[in-house]
View 1 (cartoon, rainbow, N blue to C red):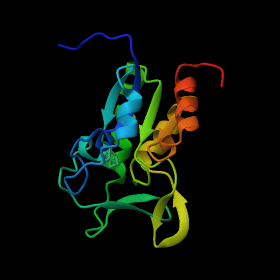
View 2: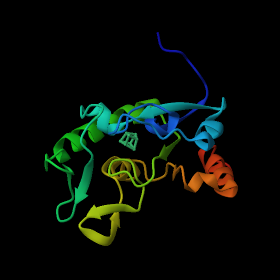
View 3: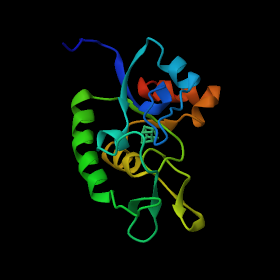
View 4: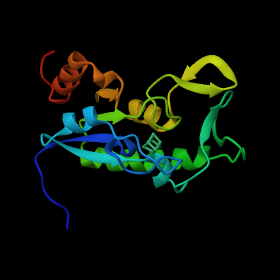
Length: 167
Ligand code: SF4
């Protein structure tokens, strides 16, 4: 049975909440993120790679230059279309849920907002495929990653924007 809550909803990369969803079977629990959510927001955990069926543990993936394919590091297995299908469904769900913000995991080829290395391009970076689709679909919804949120002013600004307050 789903609970009814009036709290604003914030999407979060699941590994930041301590869920063991990383390719290695580990997590990236981040206390700053957990404290920010506290009991004033409702977290909506999302792990694109697990939810699109890649499993845990799994082969890590990277983004390959050119047509920006999303492929297994060792096998070269191409997950790009699966990611696009996942994005379309998940963005519809997040629209229905009326999320007010999203906290992404840094530098992930799925979740990174920026600074995601492109395979074999030492100086070139991009954004992860899910984060990019999210930002395109919701251009006015505030997004941050856990490293940006280490800064107190940035956290306050993020919360104010989520609450649609003057900043
Ligand atoms: S960074 Fe994103 S895709 Fe990777 S484990 Fe965390 S939630 Fe899943």
